[in-house]
Image 1: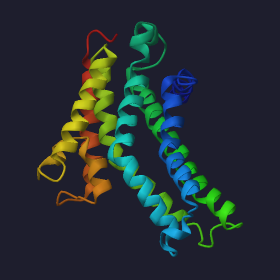
Image 2 (image 1 turned 180 degrees about the vertical axis):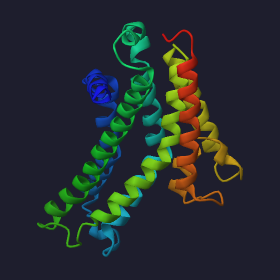
Image 3 (image 1 turned 180 degrees about the horizontal axis):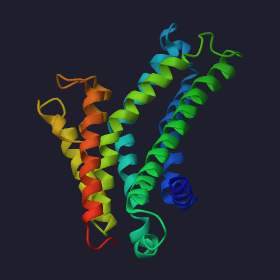
Length: 251
């Protein structure tokens, strides 16, 4: 129960925060661009390829999202949420509450994971809306193809798994450095460096930022990409937990 109360408390801190707005704006940004393009060109998703149009529409938007906006959004949201205590100078106050360090650590991470899921929710709503509105306007009906719920759920799960190493490394960095710009700077350098090395370096899997980019480009590094991302995530989280517990000055 203490974890639930701690989680509720951490979640309340994100209300009307920059991270919350980032999820909404970032999640709807690319679908809105596609919607405007469809309306301008008098085009519908059925004009993409007929059968499998929803899958093609989803794949096109998700690929563009994964190549920069999604990892950058995860970097910003993870850093913003973790750094809230530094910004408000409330780490010491938080550590005087009757909850263990483990509970604090897990609740903060869980909020970041939930915020990422919220981002995915807005993004998928945007995908659906950007596919429905042009069809209703230009064809006067819903798209004929049955909506592939199973495909959407599976693909979102895979992309979320690929994001986990980024969440973990930004969580670790943000817990160790008081300056918000340090966390963002390291994340941005890591992401840009990984983008440059994508397709040119066989050992790029050592970068936690590579998994979501590789997922977008169907690169598997000769391994199970999603299984490897879970293992990498687990290792980083274990290191982060040990460093947090042993850190003498926690804020």
